[in-house]
Length: 257
Image (tube, rainbow, N blue to C red; front, top):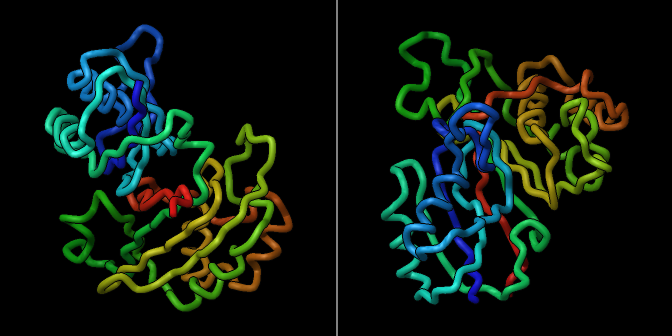
């Protein structure tokens, strides 16, 4: 029984996140996992469980989600990729498919993940606000000092307790995580992007990092205050949780040679 790895991209606006959800006494919610399992089922003609590497939230996008499943049939990876993609709705695609060892686990085998948060800023006139790209970035009316945000972001690199950067009832045994890189750069006219990569992320962690760096860009938090925010381990001292539409899962690394 072969095991297949899929690299999946989706525009998350109309999804209730990655993970399948079936509330009591109602129809299942529309999720990426649900759509993908239905498409794979049509191709391989058997029930499958498609395990995803990251449980992205409602409204969050992905360029490089990774998923895996087992089935009885053998397929050429390119044929499988195209067959599954042709059965998916227009807001999700399979970018790549590969045969992997039976023990491959997209969650446990992950070495690092990269996320991007995009912000449009200083667009106070209604006609200047995001229009065609409004579903893939977040708008703030404030002027932002991007170099100041980049300076603050450097304090997040390394192993820290990120309890200040997740929701209060997070349900995790530990809030210690390692950030490998965190940068803030201009990304077009009155737009910037925050790129964060690390070995794992807590619930809403990247969106809270983005909200905290936004407050730095506005001048409400000093860049040198970031170490103190980390040390306090208190959600109340960090910035707001920014909306999901600005967030995208860019890539997942498994350390392949």
